[in-house]
Length: 230
Image (tube, rainbow, N blue to C red; front, side):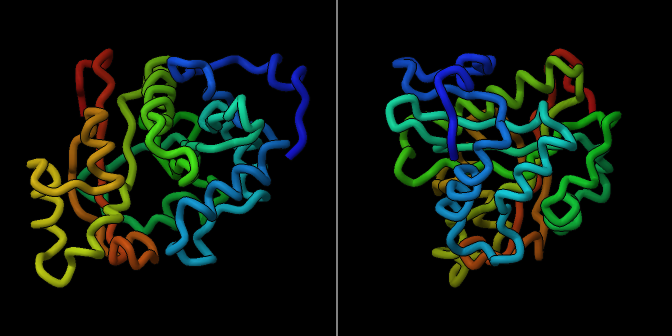
């Protein structure tokens, strides 16, 4: 990953931490190796076939550049978090889908430039930078993009990464319900619920990851400027 101050200065800032150390930027091709490093560090249990590579991140910029965000650490001079989105039309009666199918096997070939919903293909914060509010910055950037494009909202398949520790004593539906009630904390789903997302349903065999026992949770944030319409 190579860059210069001029490279960064030319990019619009889409959000920033209070102290200015972390800034949300549009992802760039020269960031691809760093984005892939963040991906691998964030998802050590994800199958190799499902990890996004540097080639994938570069390809995303050709498909839908507006939906690709990176968090840059101005002190360390590197990418420490990112999110990947595409546009889709959503059939809420048939929301259960395998992750790889929905994102075109990480190519975003399923992107519909006229899609009414922003779909969250990926979000991750490097373990070294967690606890700094970086996921909040990324969700704010995503929701801002929804408003700018006049979309109905943002949807995603959340990974309930804490479920693996509880799977021996409760079904996934009970786990998700208890996370919603704030009786249990999930490292992914709880963060999204605090960002005003709502659970729509559980997706079995969403992806291959032992930490969530291959489950996904379909979540929805509705654009208030569209009146919360489905």
